[in-house]
Length: 329
Image (tube, rainbow, N blue to C red; front, side, top):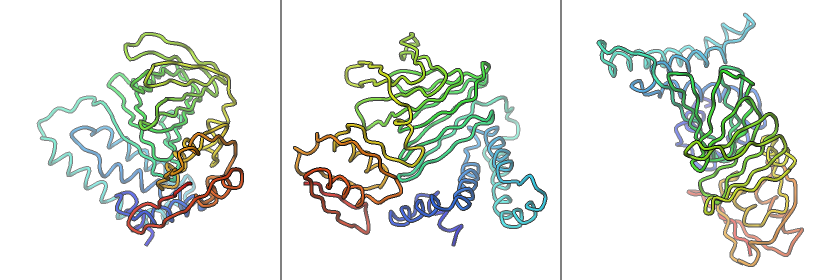
């Protein structure tokens, strides 16, 4: 049963109800959450396209093995028996891809690596890089990491991510957001760049990042505690001081709304709870709220809290075959 639900989640064949139940479960059970992410890594290995990533397939499998293979000897036998069949499948698939898809006479040189990570609605994912750096991926987010033959790394983001990068002058990482690029030299920073939103937000927690326009012309340098808002439609850039913990609260399992409009709050709730919120009374959309709420609560509870602070009413319509709808009036 455990393997079945893991596979349904990874193959995106689970129902909305199953997804909600599953992510709530692994949020509360750290051991099962760890097992799920090992499955997720193996799933990525098994589905690598060999014509693109022969070396990436090898690196990903080695990472997976190091991730799940216990340091203490007593745990190795038990773990191997449980996952032996899965390892065999991954190895056979890798062999078949190299034998069937790639002709034997083809000379394989250093190939650029590229891999995509996604975080489903209602979940937070963590990506560990080989140098000890880590990237947290927020709800309904996608990031594509690539590495060229010279070792230079690039990231493309649609959503929100927190980067905790180990200082390394030899590593070059560029986060390309389309409207501008961030070049890192070993920092901690948060980026919110959902394609559906009208602005891109960057908060520097520690270190330094340099910003460049798409033509690689220098724009500005962010310092710790600085918060940048880039308006997509006008190209206007505003930099101000802000407590970084506000921007990174999602990583700690919290909603932090500071003078946010009801429309902005509803977008946050839609992303996390996988619901559709319709504000039928348009005059309410610009009402502003300030609140800190745990993400582990339900959308019904969040709406109830908002209703207590303002004159709003709401109704939730449950739907079995699609996401629920919340009407605000």
